[in-house]
Every structure is written in structure tokens, then in C-alpha cells.
Image (cartoon, rainbow, N blue to C red; front, side):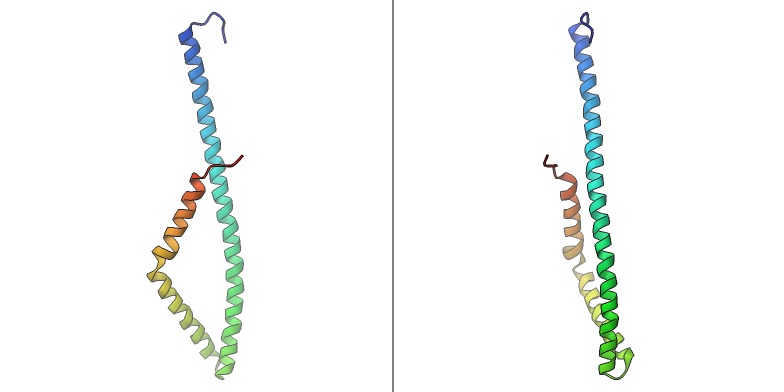
Length: 117
């Protein structure tokens, strides 16, 4: 700063510095929260894919086992398919309460929480 500057000019310089710093801090906070959200989503997706593949293989095994029990393999697949159709209908009926609201709340909490330094 200049020693010959008037108090008004000094005030404007400080206000400009403050606004630049505030904007940079806002950008960094946005980047941090976005990175945290994306990393959580990616890690949850990886876990979901792993669990889904495990359940798929397990369901094929259960279907074959049930099919052997009834002496026709397709009976096992029909029974397991019917079970999942029933689960799908239940999830469809309660999707807002069981899926949409908790997921929305989780994303909102991640976006508004403060970092503990």
C-alpha cells in the first residue's frame, strides 16, 4: 500500500482484497464439497456393484438348488424371479419413503456440513 493514499482509497483496496479472498474461499469450499460428494458416490457405487454381482451369483445358485429340489430347473428361476418381482413391487410402493428421502437427506447433509479442521 501507498503511504500517501487517502483513507477512502485504502478502504477500497482492502474491500477489493477482501472480496477476492472471499471469492477464492467460496471456490475452494465448493471444490472441497463437490470432491467429497463425488468420492462418496463413487465408493458407494463400487460397493453396490460388488454386492450386486455377489447377489447375482448367489441367486443363480439358489435358483439351481430350488430347481433341483422340484426336478425342473426353470421352477427355481421362476420362484426366485417371483420373489424379486414381489420385492420390486414393495420397493415401488415405498420408494419415496425408503429411497428418495433418505438419499436426498444424505446428499444435503454432505453438502452443508462443515469441515472439522
